[in-house]
Length: 399
Image (cartoon, rainbow, N blue to C red):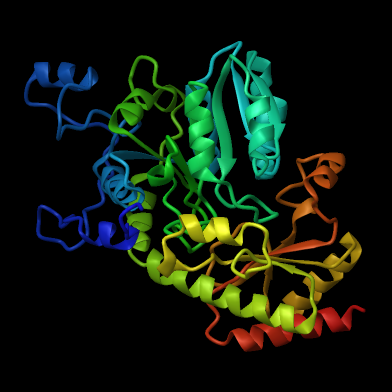
């Protein structure tokens, strides 16, 4: 059995006081950095020094402090921050492949990721196939001699199915491929690297930052991997340059210290709603209750104290009815009709017409996505019963 791992304590244990004795690391707004000796600059270019900064597209002290905390949270040696979640996804994928290589991706994935894999990366001569990652036999059969990457989300968007990271890791490694995992929906709840993933990816826009005041991403892995990613000669991140601003790095780094509190409350509120939906007969989907097909798998991989996450969905049958309900929920004050997730207010959207709209309708149906699916990112509401009553009222008002 794997020893207990507590992401929050790992973050808390980092000593990041400022050299001027500030309790927060100072914000460094320098784009470039000076050297006392020319040789030190040369060595830094070659990645042969520690404690020196070259240029903020490579490293910046503010971003480095954030990445230290991210690596501690994930149990990885290192991390690197990007200017958006899509930047993290695309850089991590592009770094692993060349023309003639093959990527095997989960069929059910974020719309932007699907569009990149289905429409964009293929123009570089990279093959991509999509498979039901819950069907491990299908995954094994879909592996090719040129497969370099298995890509999945720990909790997929928007159907909330759970990927079996330990088994997918075995399949990937047996084929000489890497397992890349997007853990955006479930930070702290799952630690994919410790479960066997090679690279862990985040849109920090969502839960990690939690304020919906910026876009940002993260890539976590070994020190060798991150160093290759930012190598000045052929590092994909270094050469494409999707750098995160140090001001944003600083604000996210501070918000990271409350993530464990927020995740527990998001999970608590989502569980409350799931139970009330069940009692009332509303068709819902939440992996925290035993009837969810992946409930036991979830429990086998989770860091228990953080719960089952803040994402839940209900099925209202048709897109028109879903739209009417969402408009009424916003009018009543449930939250906001908006994309994204991890905010302190409840957000809801019709996935097929928003965050998964890049996925063709026939593939949406193959995934099992109802056109009436409403995805909730449950907020930090202090009175979840009030939230439930308002949702129920909105549903009843649109019958």
